[in-house]
Length: 111
Image (tube, rainbow, N blue to C red; front, side):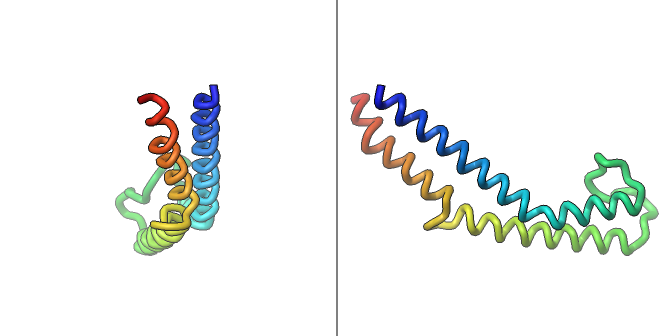
């Protein structure tokens, strides 16, 4: 019974950490997403358009798109550095707790 509770607790923690990561990523990407939405609105693109692939677009559209992608990449890298760093990051800390649980508790329990 205790093993099932421990497993459930780790699964709940995993879901919570991933939700926090997704929220942080959405916040980091917010400004670039807003720029892309504004560019699509300005050019009259359909909402589902994912890149300005139309031929005949003005050069400034591609320059703005390249800037959006560059800023988006920078935001993604900065966010990932906080969440996936080799030590001290929330995801790595969770993975360490999970590994310790498997090695120290679960595996010996089932032997």
